[in-house]
Structures are given as structure tokens and as C-alpha cells.
Image (cartoon, rainbow, N blue to C red; front, side, top):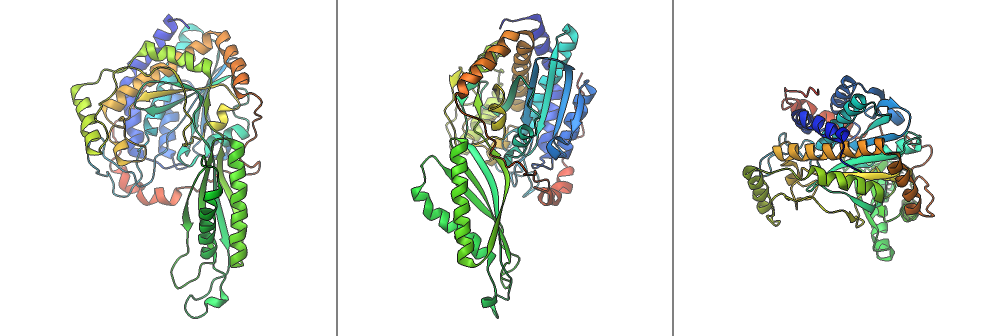
Length: 481
């Protein structure tokens, strides 16, 4: 891993497109499309990639907003992948240090996935230009992964074979520093809907003729709550009743409770899910109802390869942290003070390489990490101390803070990809150490073989707000060179 004219060319290409990277992130910020409904977002991303010379394949795993963009041929196959969906009820004006929605009640970006997309596209365009300029052999493959907030798309990609010939994979995700890690990073998670079926009746005049599906959903919730005392403290589980009936005087004949089950390993998540099914059966028995289960998604823990982490870290140190202006630091400390976290400002030094501490959060890239050596680039576009999904996490995402962090992230990602294309030994080392790192763990998908992706997810909610949100879409679009 040495500095080279090829890597410098790639980083210069990112710098030249810095304004376009910013515009792409800002456009996606205002699109604020929920998972499985990211039509404008992916339309703009693929338009840029196609104009840059990539071939686009749509409808990956049957998901209309999933795509693969490919340039080149042969080995190695280097994958870039990321997410770009928004979160519900999170609309927030950028650059404003108080809670102020753009459209009241609408979706918004409060985890920075808009910037994730800009970083990946900016890096991809730069890598392609470098490969073309210097005759670098190999295949660059760019994966657009919808609905990460609901942990949907990448387990389907892996199950359906879209990563089977990939040699190494790089993922980018927003953070508050420029850094990377190796080892286990996040939890496994199973997302499942339990739907109970009963029989309706008038709630006042003939309730004895009913079999209450809502009662069953509530009893499942209560039963699981009673079981918590006897579950491992490592588990996390949470739910919403997504269908509780239509009106109080009609006893519901259908009710749905949507659960997330989290554990430190895939097998322990599978065990947790099996216990939940037994609790659901008990609730159905008590209410004389029936139940069915729909697994929306199921993801393995994320992990990162040590060799790839070292490659990324080398480039992080070459790129360095952005220089923050006084105005940018003031925005950061004002927000930190507003939400009662330590007013540190943005960091000025890159993070050191370290072994990850496993978090109870999850990301749908987990399955990728168990079939191909994987690395992550975290880039500094979020404000330190502000939790994702809080309104404050939306404040920086269409400001110069996000723009500068995105350029640093795209340079790091592009330079790391060039290293992997140009040094076959790095790819071989990553593969060898990957085998050692996973040890005797045999990858078994948590996702059922016959499960289909939830294509209607968030459609109604997105349609409710889209027309009001359109008034705020930026007029200026990126035009990458």
C-alpha cells in the first residue's frame, strides 16, 4: 500500500466533483424517500452512473429500487455498496439548531443515508475514471441497497447470489469522524410480522360472537414481556402494533404486531425468534384465533476484515480530516449545547484503527460480511454526540459539514478500491484472513428461502407526503465530470 499516481488521480477526481457530490447528497436529503420507495433517489444515482459509463441492472432480487452498476470485466471484482433511505416523521431543516420540520410529519434524513449515497457515487465515478485512464483491469460493481432502516435488501441480494463472485466489498456509512474498524461490529436481527386472524362482531351488542385478533396481539406482547426476565441480557426486542383494527365498536378480526428481535449471533437470533413463535401460538390458543408469520428481513451481524481495515486506515491517514470553519464549528457546538451533550465541536484528527466493540444496532449489510471480506469507511458528516433518528441528526446533512465529510469519505473509498485493484496480494490476504476470522462459523441465511421482499413497504406513507415535499426539491442537479 503505497501512494501512487493512480490513487492521487482518483482523489483528484473526487475533489473535482466535490460540488456535484454535495448536490447529490442535498437532492437526496430533500427527496427523503422511505425504504422501498426511493424512486427519485435511485433514479438520480443511476442517471449519474450511467452517464459516467456504468452498465445498470435494475430490479435486483425483485426490488424495483435496487440496482447494480458495473464497469470493467474480469478479476478482481470489487464491490461498493450503501443505503440511501430516510426515516419516518423525521423532517428537519438543515443548518437550523432547533426542531423545525421542512414538512410537518413527513419523512426526513436523520441518519445521513443521503450522504452515504453521495460518497459511494462520488467514489465510484472517480475509480472508474482512474481505471480507464491507467488501463487498470478488474470489475467495479456498485450496489444500491434500498430500505436499510427496515433491514431489507442486502440479505436478499446475498441469498439470490448477487455477491457470489465478489472478491472484496467496501461499505460507506456516515459518522462524526473519519475512521474504520475490524472485527464484529453489530447485532443480528430478525424483522417479522405476526398476524392474528379471528372473527368480527359488534363490540357492544354481541362481543361473545367474536374472536378478538387484537386481544391476541396484545397477549403476545404481554407474554413476551413476561418472558424477558428469563432471556439472556444480550437480547433486544421491540415492537409496534401496526394493525389494531378500524374502530372501537367493531372487534378486529385481523391484527398485526411487528417485531424486531436482536441478538449477538445469527443462531441466537434464530433461537429468540423460535421462542417468539411459541408465545404467538399461546396467544392464539388463548383467544381461539390463528396466526401467521411474515419475515420481512433477517440479517447477520456486521463484521469487518482486518486486512481491509488496514488498507482503509492507510488511506484515511493520507486523506486527513477536513478543515472546519469557525461558522461550522459554531453550528456544531450550538446544537450540542441545545440538546445537552458535550460541546466538543467537530474532531480535527482522524480516528485511529481499532477493533470494534459490538453494538446492539444492526445493518442489512451483515450477510455480505459473512460471504466476502468486507470493510467500512466511516466519514465525518454527522455531529458528535447526536443520536441517529433524533431531529438533531438531520441538522448537518445538507450543509458544508456534510459536504466536506463526504469528499473525505469518497477519497478514502476510491483510494482503497484502487489499492485493491492494483495489488492482487492485498485481495489474497483479505480472503485468507477472512477465512481465519470467521473460523468454524458456517453462514446460514436467517432469511427464509422462499421469502419475498416487502415491495409495498412505506408506499402509503410516502404517498401521503410526497406532493408537499416536492415543493422543497432543489432545482440544481449534479452534473459529474
